[in-house]
Each structure stands twice: as C-alpha cells, then as structure tokens.
Length: 252
Image (cartoon, rainbow, N blue to C red; front, side, top):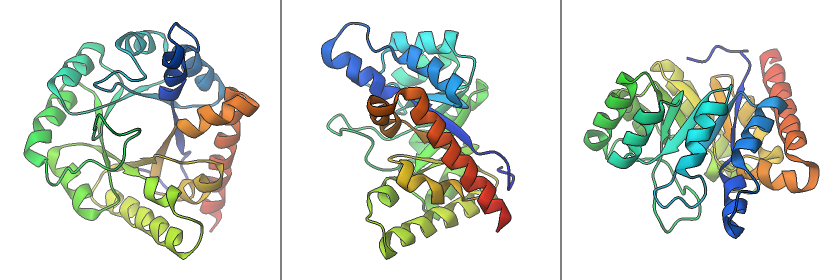
C-alpha cells in the first residue's frame, strides 16, 4: 500500500528500443544497454513486454535483462501457458498481466479481470507462489479493482491511455478524477496502485501528484524524446517532474 508523501517510483519500459532494433535487424540499438542507462539516470525499475509475436522484446532480451540488471525487472505478459513458463524460468521481480491482441499496435485497454476471473486466478496463484509480485493492468473501475483483489494480485496498474489521449479541458479533468478515485479505492482494499500508458511531460504531473500511487511505468514517450535530447536526459527530466509533483502534492 502506498504511503502518502513517499517517493514515486519510475519504471522505464524499453520495448521500443527493441522496436527500432527489429526494424532493421541486427543488435543495435540494444534494449539491455538502454535499461542499464535508464537505471543510471534515475529509473527505479525496468519494464519489458514479451509479446506472443515477439514484435519487439525477445526471449534473449529477457534473459539478459534478468542477469544484468541491478534494479527490479517488471515483465509484462499475457496470461498464457507459454508466458507463465517463461516467467517461472526467469523469476523476474514482478509480472504485470496485460491483455494482448496480435492486430493492436500497442495495448489498447485494461485487462477484464472481472470477466475473466476464473481463467486468470490460476496464473496469478502460480506466479505469487513463485515469489513474483503480480500486478493486473486494468481500467480505473472499481469492479476491476475488486476483481484484481479477488484473484489474489497484490498490485494493480491503472491504464492512463484514455486520460492522456483526451484533449486538455473538462473531459480530461473527468478522466483524472477517475484515476484518483481508483487509486483511493485500491488503497482502501489493500492493493498497491501503479499507473501507466501514454504518459509524457505534459500529462504526467497531475497523475504523479496522486498520493496513493506508488509507481508510474513510462516507455514510448521517453524513447521518442531520446531522439532529440538523449535517453538519460529524457528520463532525468521525467524523474524531476514526477518528484516535484509529489512534493507539491504533499504540501496541499
């Protein structure tokens, strides 16, 4: 459970470093090198999504990340027997269960934990029994939070895509209120609450200010910004915005 005023952790997703590598083939740019650089620049952990079609991160990447990282590795994956076996083999610090469709460019929404309770519960149980911290990537809805608690996951990650994609104004404010309410509900029922998807410099501050959030996971924006300012500097700026938002929220 998040303690108010506690430092907000930053997880950096290195998937799209691998996307650039795979566009041409070969070994450059190396997502493992990016992960090590991210840790030096202030990331508290590294996130990597091993998709069933291996469109960016590869099995070898996961193996190298697991052995070379000195910060926690968060493995994003679908709830399949293949992915469960990989997670149990490598034993990352954390696994985030996400929905996955082959035709999507990126994760389009949260996992329907309420509707898939019986299918998901055995995967969560196996991972938790292996000592892996399990989170469910969900929409900011009370029923999905309650279902995540019911299947035995200790952590949820709120999908922030709808908030980020909504133009600034009353509708975005409404989406932010949804996130705040969900984070508060997570704390109430004893879940650690994270958030991520689509966050950038212009959207992260209000989310980082939510006192019941413990971690943000950000990737695509940071990799894109790195083209202009460098990967380390893009992360340092994000880290500074998050820290300032958390400090300011503690004063109010």
